[in-house]
Length: 372
Picture 1 (cartoon, rainbow, N blue to C red):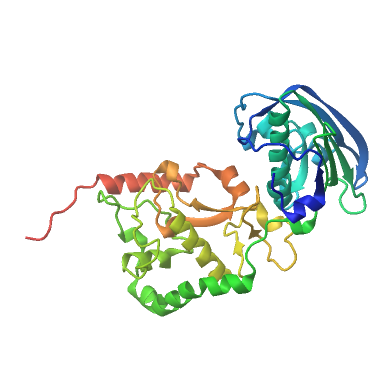
Picture 2 (picture 1 turned 120 degrees about the vertical axis):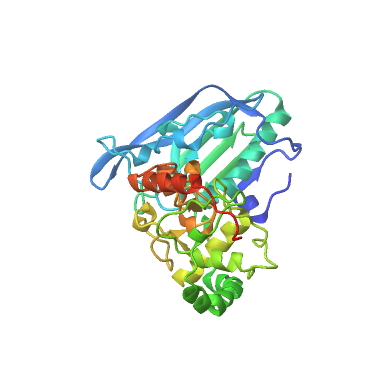
């Protein structure tokens, strides 16, 4: 097996003859045995996982469950049953991995930095899969957790893992620099400079033209379904329809109803978001997004969204829902966190219902032919 220098520093490989195998062919056997301990958080007694022992064997991969079904990690649940919000930029970390059939229940979940969960730990899970396949017989895995009560007693900072001692053994330390972080603002601004210059060049013409995406139609001739008040990215529609995006990946996008934003559109919208907020970071545009209340990492504005995070990942949402025939016009785009988008997905307010009815009436009107 090949490991990076950082991985080798974190854990020791006891058996070097393990052969690489396909990801995820192992499956938990029997019920895991969990150890818990009591701790105090903000003056209140709570319970947190201390460790788990389970057995893995080689078998077909189980069916994946949706992330929305996950319960809150045990240490985040207060005495009254109410859960703390997820710690900023953390994942729900499965002690017994999701891909092995691990439970989605609280006792199997702890908060873990996204960067740690998806890099160092993900690679070690691959190594465990390889060990199980090379062994052929079931193997016992023991994970023991350590906490730093002076910092945040809910978040484990040390994980000791033993896989049939002669196979694999490792000690992992969670570090703040294990976060997925966005591109530094100075580099990001340089990347965005071409769009910033293009917008500056055409801004006055856009304003003076009275342009609105409500003037546009989809390929079938139907008006685009949009909110009454276009979003912050309306100028991108103007640049698009006037051919100013020629030579970019977004130049060939077709605007229409009931269409997803393409990857090229998403890149352009996030770029425009960074330009508008002048921070070099992507920031949520929804005033009701819980991201605005999360503690921002040092040097980042409130509401910062970070690629690689479960909850704080930036997503481009349809203001007028796609599920109700909303269009992929830039005027219909709003940037928000993944958590907020999941919470409001397909929600229909009275205003949206009224707009949908108006758009239906518009589309049913007979169209006039060209002048004689």
